Image (cartoon, rainbow, N blue to C red; front, side):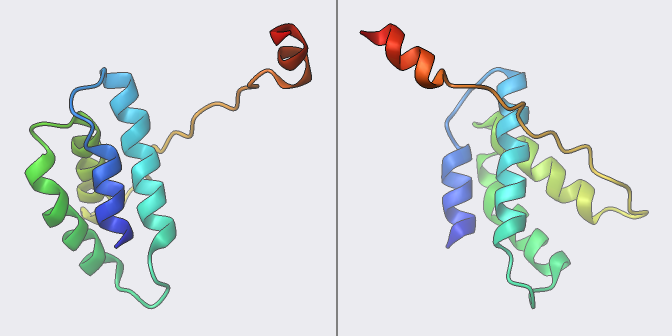
Length: 100
């Protein structure tokens, strides 16, 4: 269920490469965090890749997600270069005061 939702969130069509990379990484982390603790990683990764594969051509973010899935199951194992978005302030109290 969450896998399908993750894919639909990533399938937004064309986005610039840097945005697609961020979205793909976040989608992979969302999928990874939602895995059942008793699930076999390789089986789940292959299933996720199979479900996402039809969207690779139309969505760069899904392509990044699939690349991470494939890289995570490749031999020999190597660390993935996952990037989280940099924390940023949304404005806080100062922004609320400036709005008036």
